[in-house]
Image 1 (tube, one colour):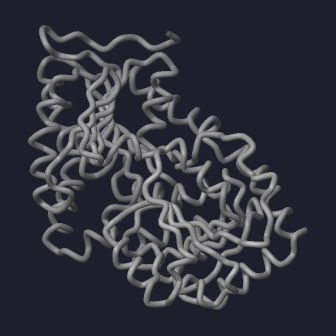
Image 2 (spheres, one colour):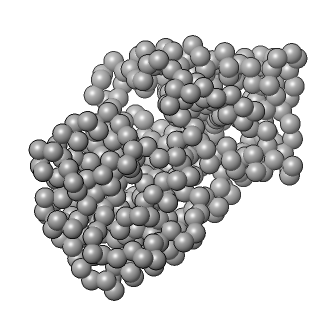
Image 3 (cartoon, one colour):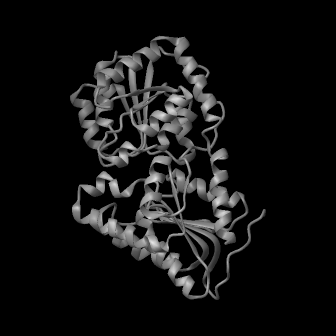
Length: 385
């Protein structure tokens, strides 16, 4: 079982763990927490993740608990989430508790406080995978923004280590909190032969992957099709509260036959589904520092699927695209610029296949097998201290 050791035991019904991961998402669809869990288990640690069952089907095993909740968002969701999650979290005496997002911090802190009082030495890791103080969905609602800002601020004294997704956000967190921050890129697990050998450019599919939510430029991505010839199509992989409105928009623009809503796809199937397309396009809006400094996992999924990309000209995404020469960076508000780049990439087959080959080379570097080393090293350090 490797170098790991079992968690400290607690009498009775309590479950001794090395690492407990708590997330407000569904672990079966949350690529980051599922990679964390798998790597810990493969390294011999006793680990478990607790999260939400978005499909409404409860699941309980030695390594994963998924709870169906009646509410899907807002205050009711969090009330129900905490009512269900906190008692479960308190049944696991983990040596390290990892809060997978801002909203998971309260039960993680309660767990740490409870077991520290019992004489244990629990470490708390906060995975700040977004710059939550600048998250547009929170800033639109002042009361929610102030509440969660207070939660984050008052949590700092309980946190032993911070993870985040890129250097720009890490610099801000370290400056504000003076806490050790480890950059863990949100890259996919390596996949082989995802470039379709029979892929041709007679009909070109653009692809979007992720939550169908405001700020991600999906509406403009649909409008982009009106500037492209009829052979250009769009696959939207994911689900969210904007889907019905976007389907109506497709009908009004007479694009229904050119847009395919694939729906939600499991973590380990996303790259395979993306590989059926030709280009990955992400026109994220500059609606604040959180989005401007984003380095989303979908960019790395596009690259792993060997899809050349057209993405917003924001610093972290620009750094990856330029370093590996895997596509174009554009002003996300300029659809004509996006269309011109797409046409240029796909009208020259030599250029297109050169970009595909660059994606293949980049995927050999930007993958979880290389990235997990830093994650496991930090977890080992916390478990040993």
